[in-house]
Length: 341
Ligand code: TXA
Ligand code: MG
Image (cartoon, rainbow, N blue to C red; front, side, top):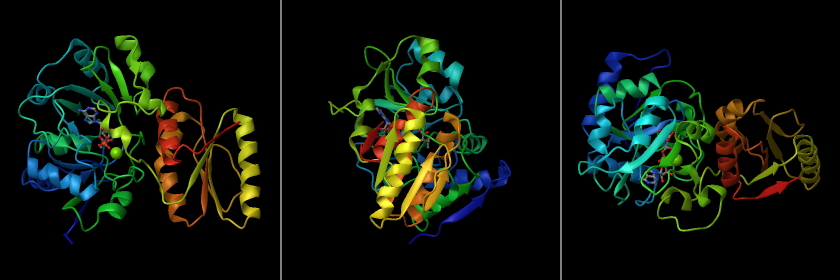
């Protein structure tokens, strides 16, 4: 058991508290902090021992690499060996923001951070607390601050649930506003390749650099995963089984209502997360735009999981804009138990 300090920064950046948190990072400690996407579990990206502790705390396989968070473009040169033109264009347009670029790694970055790869994932987050923390310390390696396999945290409370007593500090910056993790784009292959859909829609990236290849694993195909190590592991799973209903908007709500009746007649308690009201034992309203659904998704999964229902029925949405990231998370959370109507 460690002493975990909870640092309240819900009302904005407090420079005095940031200095304390920055010092912890520089001492090799673990500090969870808010980003615009989800909370991150941060450590000094260039300190092997500190980074090793992230893997231990999360129970994360050592070959699943971490994202390095920077606050200044000059740090990109520190962690990447070369910066292709596409990276410059995308960074200029979308940073700070929910876009992670995979580039050739520099010698400064330890292999522990990159899971043994010669490439490094980098992003500049848009949350003022994250930027202040990095400026007060060093480039920060941070995966999502959840125990491996669980839904990502969008509130400090979620981080407390998973890491209280295991890490040195949790900065509470209130709810994150994107709600799904950053989009991961590989710029070290022949063509720019989407490795993980996320908070920045693919369509926006293509508007800047033209057509992007989509890694087959994004669509749930079983393929060679050397380039996308994050995809071979279980993800986002609540303890409660999840079923996704997707397809035609009217039909899918009808199908959900039907399933609720069916499961309840079997004596099961049913939780529903959907974009319109459905009578069930527990109900979580996801919102009516893809942005709202993205923001509410992980909280809905965690809340329904905690409520003690026997099964969670989740409504799928169209795979456009943020919908691509939402459906990628939802199908994984369901272990690909999907009903199409
Ligand atoms: O929004 C986010 O990206 C959040 C916040 C905290 O910044 N972070 C996050 O980290 O989602 P994590 O570790 O949960 O996901 C990082 C993803 C994983 O799928 C990992 O496999 C991939 O990025 N990744 C990291 N480095 C890579 C590399 N060198 N090559 C390919 N994929 C990489
Ligand atoms: Mg994660």
